[in-house]
Image (cartoon, rainbow, N blue to C red):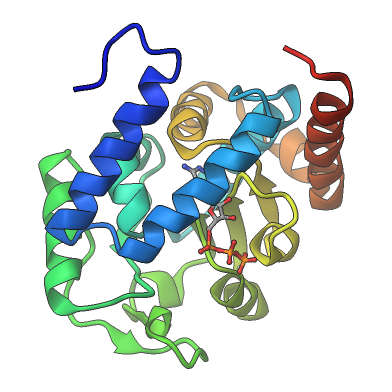
Length: 243
Ligand code: ATP
């Protein structure tokens, strides 16, 4: 039982939920470690969406709106944390939702797809093929899904696949609290924010941005600048103990 007045209530409830999802097999045990790394970086951000991240989220919406074949790639952690937010974003931008896992088994894929469907997502499933040039199981995707996508949103990604997707000519939007990760550096656009906070901002922007605003945001996209702003924000908090 986590007392409601505990100062870390939300974080503890989230951890408990992820641990429960790990026991069910939705989240991999290794996924719990990734969450811990994310939490550490979120501390440095003050556990809130920075101005720069908000602009990155609006830019992500602009990229998704401009895409012809957008895909949202979902792993176990993302499904456990934000299945409903994924479903709402899908409704707002018309992207396909496809499960892609490092620790892949048919049972896990099915469990995660069911979780997403129960949350209201229309999951693009069916036979996955080893189509990406990777030696691990993130290589599996669907020919008419991720393989054919022009824009891919990859929350909580690993660097290898991000690099491969960019190498295939796709625009890759990453959500990653670690601005130093390989993913953050390789993506077309990196949102340095917590996934549960980031997704609703992208969804709102998909619905509210004008076409002109979208064009302006895409034209101004400068990922190294977004990463520098995130690092500066974290450094300032470390050096000056900001609230
Ligand atoms: P890379 O190969 O890109 O260097 P990595 O080895 O850090 O990445 P993973 O262990 O797969 O990759 O971790 C995924 C990333 O997701 C981590 O950098 C972590 O900071 C981030 N992350 C974890 N939980 C969240 C969350 N809830 N919201 C946003 N980012 C998160």
